[in-house]
Length: 395
Image (cartoon, rainbow, N blue to C red; front, side, top):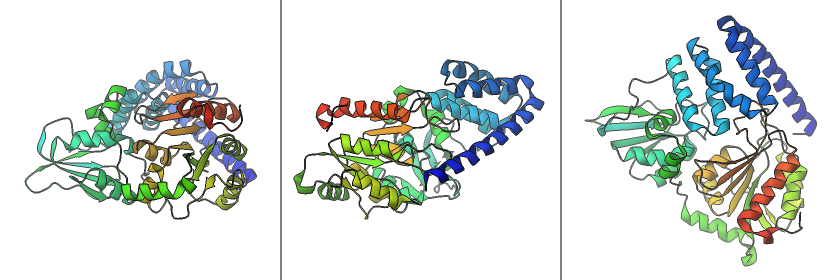
């Protein structure tokens, strides 16, 4: 997609968002003028990157939205807590939203004994649900299954192989599928929210429970041998430069080119295909033809298990924030993420964040800065981890 077309799509999306916000403010004013005023203050503070003012008002908005039963606003505020990596507040208010919406299952796990139960964990209730749901809770699955007589895990069809390998003692199904207990046991259900509510979301909980997904080791070794051309000792870095969603800002391709040309590593393209991908790939590969690899045998949109093996053969992934970065984090691969600062984005507000549920993942947010500054910080992060010798030219 050309830069012009991307800007047109972004403009249309912003216009659509503005209209949606206008309608929401009108509806909210009818329910609670105070809530509408606080919501507008929240948005203006966020656009000004005044994070202190934003966080100060969030709980007040959530409480009032819950009181007047403003479902949409309550959900928005719940998700906004993720921008501060406040998983406890996010989980609490998401639970309140589901309660208000009547979406909580009567069979949900409340923390009771599961020794005579089938624990049915579902991360794929509808076809529309994304592939990244529950990806950060592999350790929570591991902890929960130890308490149940039987455990069934429902995931996207592309993830069945890797979850089955990671948890050979539980049944892993391709969803969506209706829950059912094993004979002689009671049915207890869980999803991402329930696991977080019962087992906790404090940093200490996330670190304690963390276990990585297990890729196919034979394929990992095969990829590693393939990419170590002529026994090169260069680091292997995956690179993914865009999601090309209208809800995200695109990083200028020139900055990715500069990264490739200034870092002495072999770069393996992990970017999924999209309209215009071939043209952008050609530009990326021309940046350093001898150090950029595009492996046509991998297509993560079709075979996530093969993609997991490719990622696991690398020393690190450098990417925009996407489902791929959730996946690499779940695999335990060092991950360096960039993220824009659009209001509707789920990325954290702050310009620098270590991701608590992925022990070796770091996010570099735009947060009102130029992309060039973001990439300067990202390079410094690479130098801090791998040493000054990875630089081809001094910054």
